[in-house]
Length: 286
Image (cartoon, rainbow, N blue to C red):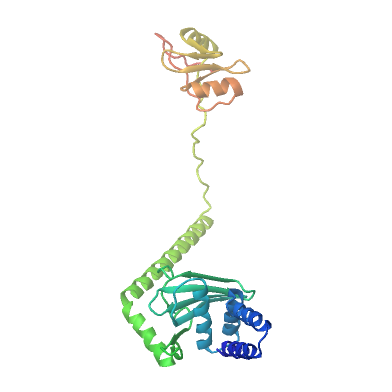
């Protein structure tokens, strides 16, 4: 306000003095007063230096109008985010939705909103300044100790059910954790106390002891059909594979037979099938 009055007085003085210099000086002063960068710097400085909220509100209204938004006067504003060299302000103009104004110490300014995209003012975010029709500060959202206590009590009373559920859930989680830790500790203590050795479990890939002589294998090979190099299939469904050392082994799957033939790996080896029309001999294996 003082700057505008000073500009007007200077213009009148120059106009009375006459000369071509008067119009140029006034144009420069008007340009400076409408410069968004200068307005942003004024708003940033005013907030950080504790200027009267009414003067800050006037600057906010001016910068909103410079960006061609409608703003008759600012009725409320809130500095809801304050970062180093940057301020985010919510401003409520009379009869319009909220605007968002971002200003920085280097003169950066951005104005957005006016269409409902800016969320409502919340006094839990920051202090809210409210102004009357004359532009003077009427109130702010500061709470006294009694008001803060009453508000806290009201919130707790409104959320009694949810608070109880939250406490019960937390108790259940803690109890489950304690039980799990106790179970692990008891298991370790039990293992340490008992010195009995665990039985060795039979692995699923452990090979069987094959009871078949060379003559039996020759006979089984004659009864079988060649399905691949060094792999034969017996009518009983068994596969006979010849390994790299010439030994013949029996498998139920062609895959394991091929692995034994190529790599010598005896996986899922099984006993020899019974020959066609003859019982299995019981003499020593090859």
